Length: 480
Image 1 (cartoon, rainbow, N blue to C red):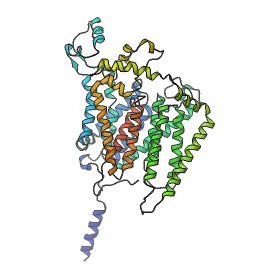
Image 2: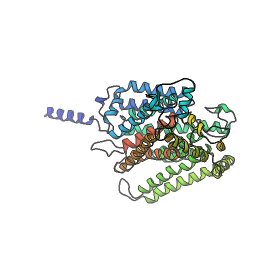
Image 3: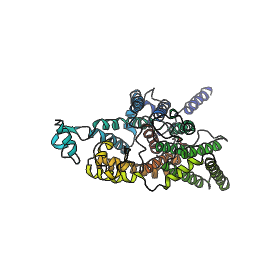
Image 4: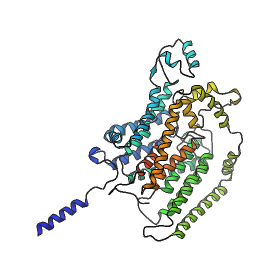
């Protein structure tokens, strides 16, 4: 009898420590070092580094190099996890990743002179090479160095996606909270930038714009879209543990982030605040008619919604009272009828048609656009970018990149629709909302042209792809 009791206790003890399925590959494929906790910590460290020093864009190569070397070190240290991503991830995602890496890589392959000179838009390049006596093979890209920079810029988002794929859902949510915390860090830095006339208060003191919140970014629109992403995460991500202070703390942080977005004076970021507001309203409305015990709590839910809207209104009033000049500047920027972007787009459309369908090479916009910019649109400042990322990638990579962007958007729509079947649908839709905000700002700016926002976009797609999968029997889920 005692032996039977002992055997029963042993079996119960064994069953109690049986691992829970989490929708990720078993650890035996990852090795002892590549535990999900370790992977999440390292990806979180990479996100912090990329956001802290990678917001300057292509002009700040040393900072970008530090983030990329960190990513390469993680890929080398966790190569089993990297290989597991290529085995376990959906084949469609693997195809998109490979195609994204292939576009700039193919543009660097040398071509015979008879081939590259026959490509559209190469007449001026051929004459320039002939003038200096340079003949022979040449790559498709008109500026190989810029294309190499574009290719290496994909290392950080690839690392976030591939290494983070093997983490559990709750650990990926924790990574989202790390990005949200970096939003508060940018807010803290912005306080000094908006109240001080010292250019050294900014990470990039060569930017002559005082009283504007930049945080760790060199572009106020990039700072604004990053704060919008942090706002989406703060508003929608589930907190690890239920506490009474979570709701007021969440609302307070969201109000602070909205105020920070106003101080960036970014029109696009201010408009994109609508995205988290609509999603929060939809989430509260969808959960108003049901709860765990089946009781109706309409009054409570809408009471919380009303309180949140009241706090936002109070925060907006406070900003108007304390900084009326900055708010007026933001409003006046919406009223300007002479938007220089319109003239850039006119000339950029001509450039796109000139190099269609092969493009001029990733990263070459600034070089090729100057040859096509019309005299009546010339100013003392260089355009630098097309201020429309869809138009810019059409110039740089032609039809191939247009199809690739359409494929990424189709994958985003498919996963967003599929997430309705998952119990973690609101976590997935959090990542989807971030990608939506980035896609919308890409119409008037270039949010994905720095390492910081590339890493945030990779994390957003990771949230969407991992949490859009319907859970299997026994799988660990996060209830929201």
